[in-house]
Length: 260
Length: 319
Image (cartoon, rainbow over all chains, first blue to last red; front, side):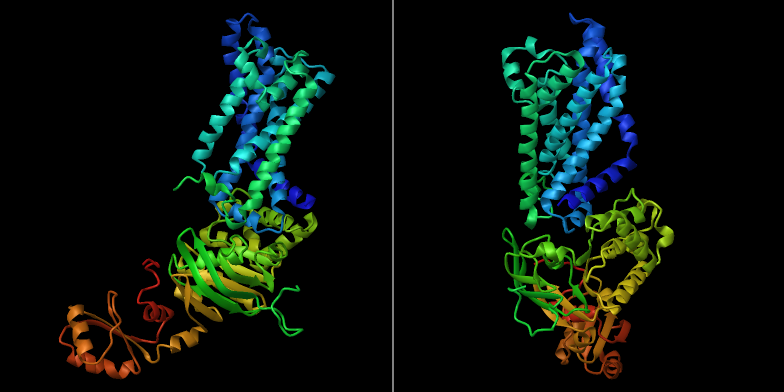
């Protein structure tokens, strides 16, 4: 089992490394949010430009982690369109190991993207001391694993690369906008505060904001618990989809199949 | 295994043992009761037009689909209940490319070795051995996407061999290759079979099936004939006369009136006869139409298929 997971992780990371230029290209979106959207919105907010950039740094970090984790999950949809995935499926590896390996590999890719963005923190006015940096990195690791689980839970139900991005955007964008990444949750309307309680991204942003600014909306233990619970639920959901794929090389995706 | 069919001690189980196998997709009956037995060390071809059920049968044997009813065993193991143990013993080449195009051949083989539980050193060694065995060491360090179609298919074969499988399954493995590349590919597969490995492959090219020890002809989800290439061709007896005339319809009518039985359909008139060389001059003399082309040849597998099903192999298996 462990050996199978390690093999799948190595397989995916080796393929990711071919595309490592993605790490640089992946910087564009968060930096745009940070320095363009951040400058524009910050100038008109009561916080002022500098404070606002610092405030949304955890939010843009979450955005970056969320999108790179989801992109990693897309590879499973791509693989399904060629025979690559079949070759993995007929290997003597337990199905749960394939699911777990893919989720871990996705989390590593997402975390790597976050580590590339982290050095920009001082530019956003968020200079971190070593303790803050350690807290931030810990929160990023937990967030990566959560987002990778989200990506896989969605991806393993799709076998069309044209539908998956649309479907994932329909889930990801609301999760990001509700997370309080770009505004303080405590100033948000009551219904949004309630909704944020059901949004894993909100807990991830809040943990990172606690590390950077020392302030949080949720109690830290609640955030940690919510993220771990999300991971457990979504990983078991993905594993069960992989397990029931015995009669279908598209691995349970037929339920949401897009007829070609 | 305790639930394996009773065989005398010391006799190895059949490489492939399929009994009364049925597979439905919803209301579509893809396989309608298949019985096949392949002995170890045999090279076995499943020949049939597109849509006949070849890939479905292949997928069941490859542990990717479960049968609706009936049983399928590979090397004595049930493809559903014992699939985990079985996967270790099989090497599989799919119709679709299953190598990562952006990685080198060597990396692909190495990663596949890891998936099969080899150590890093072991996987690296096996990759080199297989590359050398297939004579593609010089291509091994290029990205797969830079290789030609034939070279890529060789790499697929290498990928399937990296774990030293006892049985090799190939599904339309040479789809899209030119004749030369196909001949080279099957030459190598034949060598593997001669070295004692069981090979089970599907194809809709009759000349590919000819390299097999035995062939099963499949159509509409049933096996219509099974035997060695020689046996299948001998079923027709004698040989074939093919004629092209300026009025095929009239020629057919004349032939039928005079005690011949031209095969229905087709661009040319196909006639089975015990002694085609003897009958041809008589036909040329007496046919009331102008004969543009006449040919006498030994029966091919395509002729056998045509005789058994009334359709050509290239046409596709549609009602």
